[in-house]
Image (tube, rainbow, N blue to C red; front, side, top):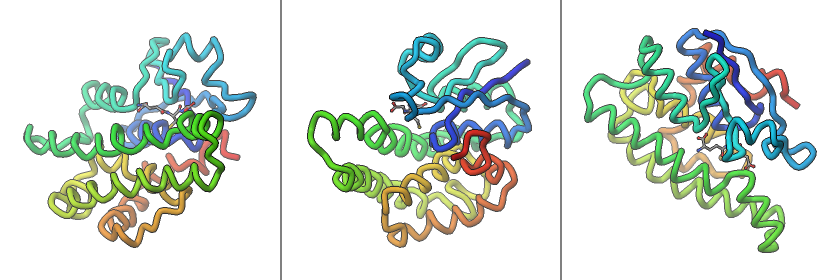
Length: 214
Ligand SMILES: N[C@@H](CCC(=O)N[C@@H](CS)C(=O)NCC(=O)O)C(=O)O
């Protein structure tokens, strides 16, 4: 099986998949797709043929493109179940997926690049206002996530097992810092981050370690 990840170093959704591939010990090639240069290479015909949503990541599995990071994560979990990134009990798996969706549906889409660009282009938001927009939505989602983690977390977001919730948390914390979120408000998220960033799979997935890092 050949795996190729179309990725951008600072793309939080690509980062989730990089961690999963590393956790599962899967080898893959990276094809960088620049999200900003020339108006964004996600808008090229070549990329749109692979992902009509014009987004990253895209995982090519033996040439078959799969997009949507959570669909990719679930695919990897099904095909490569060890080490598992979900708990065993269905109700616990549901809670982990709930945490994932707080970020995947509740935060990231509202602060995505094209949303910010449109706020600037069509609605007159300057950079500080675009940042304030993103910051507000990250804080809103993190309040919910912090509540869930206080209830279900221990070393990691859900108990003492690294789960998909952690794979979505780490990149979103990076975005939160980019948008100057006051993370001291979310101490449990910071504690969990301290544990996760010791793990080699998380270390090598960091944006600064990617071939296209600026
Ligand atoms: N729900 C999608 C979201 C993908 C997404 O928004 N990716 C961002 C990078 S993290 C992107 O490609 N943005 C391009 C743009 O906004 O033009 C997923 O989880 O894969």
